[in-house]
Length: 141
Image (cartoon, rainbow, N blue to C red; front, side, top):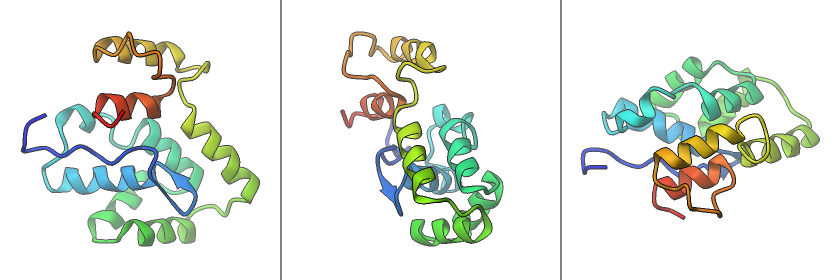
């Protein structure tokens, strides 16, 4: 990646017990600033972004509008919780497990193998989930 672009935060970063949320917000901010690499742009609002918004019960575009308007990660999550779905602690625990292990022996396992091959990470036996993949592909792992 060249200096015009910034790498999004790790998907493992979390706020308010919600993994991935800080990355979602960071990608929105980077896109607004023209600093999000095109490789990330096609997936904005999809995949982990979508699943996170579905869990919170908010529309991605509405959340992104709040982030672009200047809300911090903490305030954006508060907005999502106010306008979305209230979740029990057991649902949050389920969500954490779900999002952290996407790609590991699930319906996206073959896609993970494909993405690893495309990125030159096919030999990385330590890359077992999409969180692992993002961190490895972005140089954090």
